[in-house]
Length: 361
Image 1 (cartoon, rainbow, N blue to C red):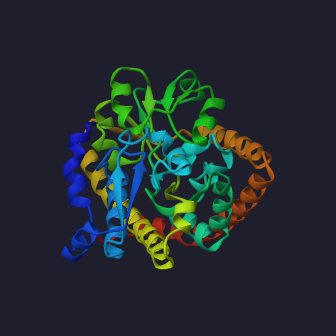
Image 2: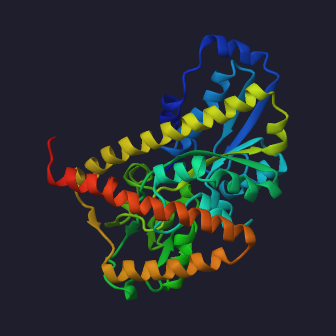
């Protein structure tokens, strides 16, 4: 998907800035840069990063303004964390598992296979001790993280051929991120982490055989439905992956208290807005995808799903043993997941079954 195709979406999605704020910007003493891992105006991710940047400027009356840089404009998409840590920019927008090379415990703050869904993830971070652990994990790098929303349940990916058995996975060149990639690697898959803006080209050029990105809204915007026939849902590894606003900790601590609170508040507002954006537009895009025809929806065959779960348990056990911090994060996350799983059987799962069996719309 070419960058210019997103420009209109970015402009339409940006937060309108009052005239008073525009005037204040001219005399603003503080202007920060935000690097992102997303192409400018990319649905859901790029648009909401821009909205977040604009909201900080509007809420502060122009005292703190943020200039956004899309993937590759300031730094490459997978180097945003380093840019914030080193002070190349004051802010970044991405997802924690992109920086797992710094510390594999970062995976927990995006999400893990068969893990917390978006509202459950937000609950763990805000009320279950997850935020304090996240800040502890980022502290050695001088980075302060804020939860900035989620895409909700993601899609498992686009495949040129059906996956019926584990043998169909072996040797497959699959673009997949996070711990899901490690699970797939243990099942014989050749894992590739292609930057988002390059996925379509890689599939069309047969550099990769399959790819997961986000869900119907983003996948169609990037043209992935034109690159493969079979669409596997849901993503076993991304039940509710977190997006983040990263801030250089020293720069944040140098802000006036009211500006610090504006940054926090803007991130919280963005978290709610981003999930709402994805929830509505994924449903809308899925309807269009079905109506267009040509795509065959699939769920993971039970033997394949069981193998994914077995591999995931091994991967998570090893991660939990990798450090004292990892052990504490795993225990906290696991406690939240266990309680969420028990409650969801009588809430979300039961309500979805009830609604599907007794439609009134």
